[in-house]
Length: 483
Ligand code: ADP
Image (cartoon, rainbow, N blue to C red; front, side, top):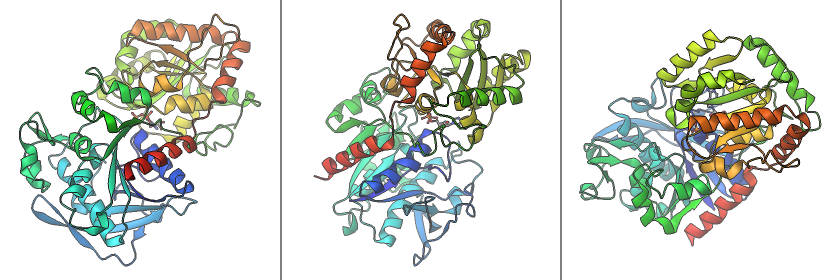
């Protein structure tokens, strides 16, 4: 089976969030399940060409991509994922991808991803790659299902191509002004009121994907149900309801070659459940460099996240005084919204022995915080899947999470009254600061009883969320879509 996997970010080339982790791991697993999978992404100037040995695709002459009535010079580049023969193809179009950030608020943001969507199809034509499935991910790829059915339908190479559109986060919709219809060479009939691409008088790339894809999936079973409701559907719940018969939830896996304390080269000391002492060494070292005094009996609470309201920062800010009263220390790594950063920076400055905020994006530090922390905090307002709570389980770092989306599907609440509970974390239901603090208190209390804590760590560390299981489910879904 030929699979074209299209994503605006892919590990190890370029990443802002979980989408990149998925796009860098799932295709490799699909390959081991027998699929001929090729990954497509834009050639942002931010990508390190040399490090990744990215070269011009042999035999493919430069071409043009028509966007907004103008032909833009384009080309195709390629490399293989490290230690594999899975190919990644990069759509080069300097007019649109030579920028300082991957995503932007610039006025031509829609054009950038029109360019990517067309570029992917132009590339496949030149590669003579006839995909059975084009697996599209998030709004940046939302026009592909439409283009396949209309603008490129003339090409027999796409004669039996079907599309799957995966929602990684329905909060990001790619809604743009009406001029986008013309810029994207889209049939204007689709833009009438309630038309398949129209969204409150704008063109929605997400809605286009949802309307034109043969099948839709999202990244956990609970989120697949949640997005059918007004509360979580980002306004799209009625559209999804109409497409419910082709909507699936498949939990993301994690790459245990990258996120595994036994082999993690970023750590000061590698460890496993049987050598759990190594975890304390990581805690010691991280606290030392963070200027916080180490104590075996006081838990370290970690958090790694984009700093956006979705991730529950409003609860943290509201409850920060109560959190600081708890017998715990905090180390957070986060990048994003200025208002949260300013506030938490102030706390870090005021309570240097209790709370440390690292800002920016730092892969090594992310691994170290996972290993060093005793408790991992993830109080999301909504969470399509969430990866860090799954990494935390593997690192014996007990998650405290809100019961939503993928968090509900991956963390089992501990009943601390039971001596021998089979839980893997502490779960609270309502998106409410006091509930979050209560859950933290429950975790801290159990932490003081190390025998019980070890049992919970053992439960957590033996969970298996590897990509093998999820990749198999995707293969089954691809087959279903094809048939
Ligand atoms: P989302 O995709 O909504 O950001 P996920 O939990 O699915 O959330 O994935 C987040 C990914 O990004 C994880 O791999 C996490 O470790 C990583 N990450 C988030 N913030 C940072 C940061 N500041 N530095 C390094 N990695 C980060």
